[in-house]
Image (cartoon, rainbow, N blue to C red; front, side, top):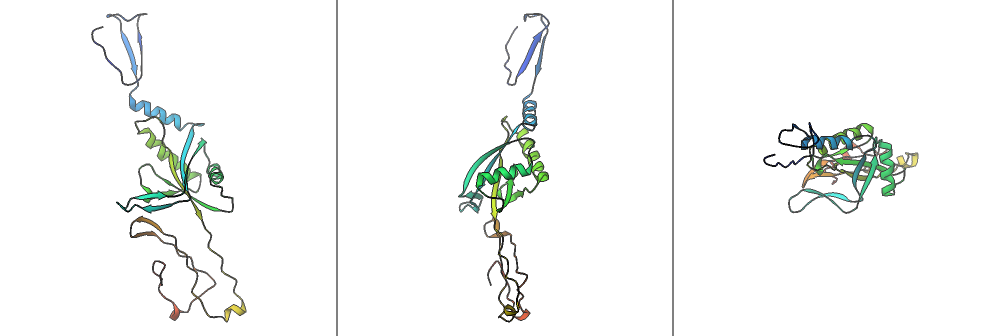
Length: 220
């Protein structure tokens, strides 16, 4: 045949006869690269396929001094691989084993979406959240040039339980009033901007109106 051609994607060719001559009818079935990526993504989402999590724990998310971009500082980084179909209870048990956290430790799992940065982490608390997260990463993996599916970027945080207030008694009722317990949790999306602030007040301690002082960002 006059001229040669090269195929960038896989193809299967058959002829009407046993050998290829100039008069033979050549039939080629070509799979475009997009179809190959979709097939690979479908295989990655099939039951029994592995789901890999790149987990970080024990560190903090802080802004970088040069440009203010958020980064994870300190702690440990581990890769956890589990098989589909995946339940949240199984994932949580595996993560606790990896971190050495017992059942009594309150754990928060937050993951980064494939199209977002560290300032937009999503909380994963059950099977519904986990299913949506897997769908997002499956769709992002299908759009990639590489066949290997993306690793899910996960961050683990140990949530400390605030101390309980002592019970109110007759002797304590006669003692001077004190300022209630205040706990703040800060998550910074950009340097100098407070993204989230949570205040927990003791229910047993009450401050007279004329003794109250304004609380702003944790300072009196």
